[in-house]
Length: 307
Image (cartoon, rainbow, N blue to C red):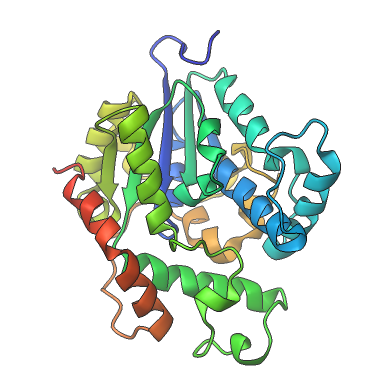
């Protein structure tokens, strides 16, 4: 079966997003669809490995695994330490991820990933063929403030912070998070959106997380119809246990479970809750980062799916 061919009535979908956009809860929700295979942030962990390799050796990481096993093994060690979870070196190669996604044979394949995962300048060539591209956005103040809190907690628990970085009030997400991309995730998502519009699909689907939480039934049903995933009202409530997550394919076999600071709430979720209140107290780094990327959010927001 070629990369563009799908099993009868099947679908191939990538959800590109920024952190803290209910993307993991949405992925858990869709896990209930029969014969649906989930791939969890495969390119994002390739990017983490690339960032580690660049910081250590001042050069770009090899994009394929064969012949570059040693370099990717070293990058995997760094990523495993920062994540607090073992990752597999071969799963950190862009070429391996592309091949894995193009040869998937399940009736439905759903990939949840970050636009920042395609940050290396030549990574866009590793976008798999045959997939429908969709995008999930959220107001940068909401997403960046939530991301900052989660990363601070993760790094603190792993003993990776010291001095003023170990104080939540003086922690600086730009300075203290080596994985925080220069476009604060939003610019990178925007760049992938623009690339898809120009080279793959001139009308990719964009959904806003707060729109989704305000009208989950309406937005989810419209989204599923647009991408070919079977929809039923039963998808709006799901098992709170973490059993379905055991089938997700990720850079490490226990990665999702080990990163509880990021995914814990989604792991234990059983339905979509109404949007939370807008953050009232913001740290200077969150304000600064949000201001720099709001123009990209606003353009994508104007092109969102409207219900």
